[in-house]
Amino acid sequence: MNAELRHSEAPLANSEPSPRVHMVWTRGIDGVPMVGRIKVAQGVRAAFRNAGFSVTESTLRPLTNVRSARRLAAALGRLLGAMAKGRLVPLQCLLFGDPAEARRAIAEMPADCDLVYLDGVRCLTLLEELARRPELPILTDFDDLMSRRMSLLLELGHAPSTGYLKSSMPRFVERLIASPALSRLLLRYEAASLRQVERRFAVHSDAMVLISGEDAAVLRRLAPRAAVRAIPLAAQVRRTEGNLAVRPLRFIFVGTDALRQNQLTIDALIELWRREQIATPLVVYGEQHRAPSLPPNVSMPGYAANLDDIYDGRSILLSPSYIAGGLKTKVIEAFAYGAPVLGNRVTFEGIEIRKDYPLLVANEAEMLPLIRDPERFRDRFERAAAMGLQIVREHHDPVRVDKAWRETAVAAMGRRHVTKAPF
Image 1 (tube, rainbow, N blue to C red):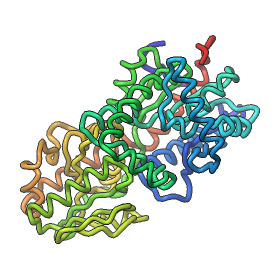
Image 2: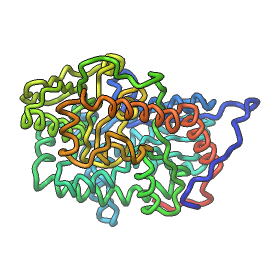
Image 3: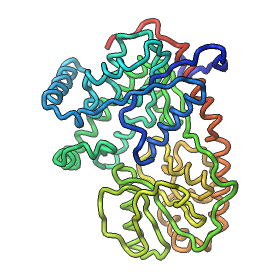
Image 4: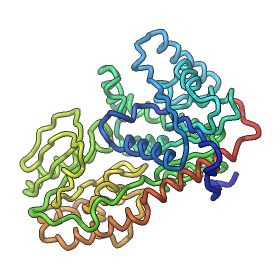
């Protein structure tokens, strides 16, 4: 199979029954705070519905939520057994490695299911169980390429992040993961095991999707025969023109510190405001698990359910980023609201940003004057806001994104492996 996924342009026939996709999630995506991956997941589900698919769903529960020592022991036994055969199992896959959960998800699939959608690499055990039903096409949505994320954390010397699983983890496990010696060992193991598992997904998936073209390029090098496509986040333009009509200007950051990439940015910004005694307001939105000491002019009001309250006509998203991979959904959201975004190269990875974008900075020295006196550079911020809106219109239009998902699903359903390598 060529590295690029070949897309079917044929529309789904209206005279035929709706194709059925069964979507399997590794977290609940309804009734929870609308953070990055949740928004993307809801958008993917909407794209399938917009394309005329009938959608059914299952959610895998992690072993940390299954209060059974027996099941945890069995999972560890499976890990040791796999390692004895030279096969690595990422620890994050192990958390979702209960075969009973995988069999439950399969039992919930309609008998006439046309396509199975898997929510990332943590669905490994389910993928193995699906090998017993080779007639079912599989579309795997990696979102971010986790092996790359772990490798980058290792290079930067940071501890791994448990992300949305943090609330399910015992405190002593969190402390162990944060210890310098163990964290590097865990990152090395996760990076190596994830690369191995990502190749296995490539063999057994009929289509693979990532949100970033950079991540997609890495996966193609890792698995040259995989059918890979990058599909960006869909975003609806919320303002028809740049939204900086109110004075004075302020800076904002949006994100929970449960994610390592957000935590690093939040800590860097707090330290910058403290060290440089910056007078411009900085407001950090999002659910925070820590309570850091804040310098003057920095506030943390918590999670904001409505982005209209955040992008109020005077807000500039300040988001220097330190861990590459994926796509920063907060950047696209800010652009969609007509707000400018100030960041570095990593901030805009996976986004079709132009080289002349006026708020792309190389280092802190370039950023500081903009932060100290944003009114002085209002014209620069307004030009950035207008360019951001154009990026959303050209590359994140929901109609185009829905079409990309439809094409990818149709291609997956038309590409069934004649034979599959055994697990």
